[in-house]
Image (cartoon, rainbow, N blue to C red):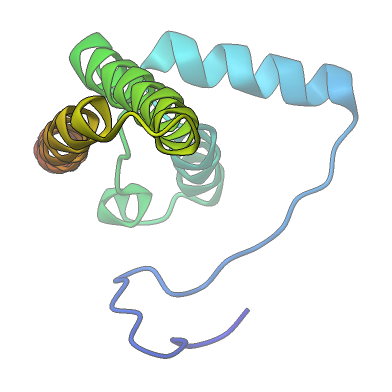
Length: 132
């Protein structure tokens, strides 16, 4: 793949697809995890070492911290709550429960706000981890 696409602003715009046997992929995954890197970052690091290329070409992409993973898990749980609340809202509306439906709309609005904030926080923390 060559060059940038659309509004892409990546500093590393080139990509190479590497196909491998499942066993080799497992070994790469394990090695990358042990090094605290993404598979792409670990492979890039290995290529830079093998080619004796400038070290700055092996820019590191760290794996998400457990905090980032927990924020993402929490955001997913709130998304499921949103879905369940939408289903409840439909049932309340069909049953003619206007007062309960109105209260449910307020709850749904809060869930959606919380979900947006969690997604924003997850992205912010993830980006901060990547910069370190």
